[in-house]
Image 1 (cartoon, rainbow, N blue to C red):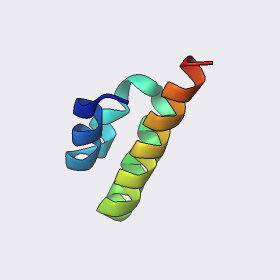
Image 2 (cartoon, rainbow, N blue to C red):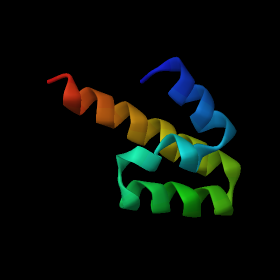
Image 3 (cartoon, helix red, strand yellow):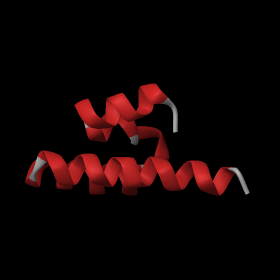
Image 4 (cartoon, one colour):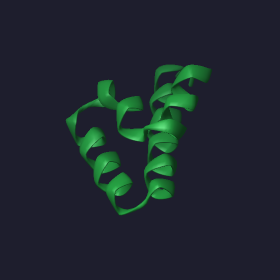
Length: 56
């Protein structure tokens, strides 16, 4: 996960995962509407998992 992605995930979580797929974007968007912290956590988890899969 790059530093810019992490900062973007903290500022506006759905924008950080827009290239991860429609499902990820919708999940993070809905969680962000329910509360900022759940959206940030989901975005950081999705970004972290997407990088670990690519490194294997």
